[in-house]
Length: 344
Image (cartoon, rainbow, N blue to C red):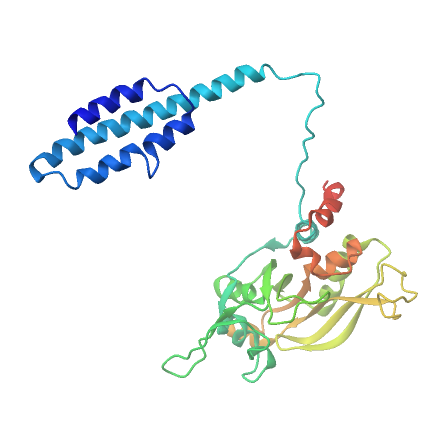
């Protein structure tokens, strides 16, 4: 075998043909070196170490020669191709752009930051306390059922308290975490992704994005909520936009109201988009329920506050006249390119 290795070392150094032919002959699975390593298994134990060392030297030499052949071939091609033709038209360079939901989220943040709101974030995987119980959801509330919420783990502690782990259904969980850590005054918005166990359609999805707002301080009233949302609507949708508040119910606010804006398509005259009412719903809102404040260690006899929540997809669909919610998550570049000119 020693003579064979020495012969191959000379043969390899003199090989000047194609690099791929060299690889197939010497380094491939069925090549010469692979056969030699198989023979090494049958060599007596006292000679195996020395033969193994020589075979490794042969293999390294072959690999280095193969790299040299590849580089030489690449250099030959470069010389053959010559210098680039500077008379050819340039390759068009296209820049990326922000997703429409990102554009809307940034605009919402900008509007509320001018009103003194800060921005906060929280976990998307949440426990029952921060997602339901602290927000005054009763034990038998439909939102706690499997058909409405994505549960990761269902469990109870030794005292029988609910300790379920789930994907958050709203960004209100961030409100609870903030009030537990920071006492009023608090003025903050909380954008983020949320999850609902819903069938995917043009109007619904199993995940979407929300932005919620919270303002807790001394003497905060419903008029503050109304004026805040009125200012937002005019800044987001135009100075002619009107709002109306309809009585509603949410476990975490009392009193509660749905927020409608005048239809952007028909300007309040009535069309298919607004179902001929002249109004389109954009958000839910209300005064923070005293039980929610108590659960966070805030005295409702001293502090009051309001909260609101809206879907970023809903606002984007209204602002840009988009008819199908699924377009936001399909990543069709024909759709996404339409928002390139929107970037300021």
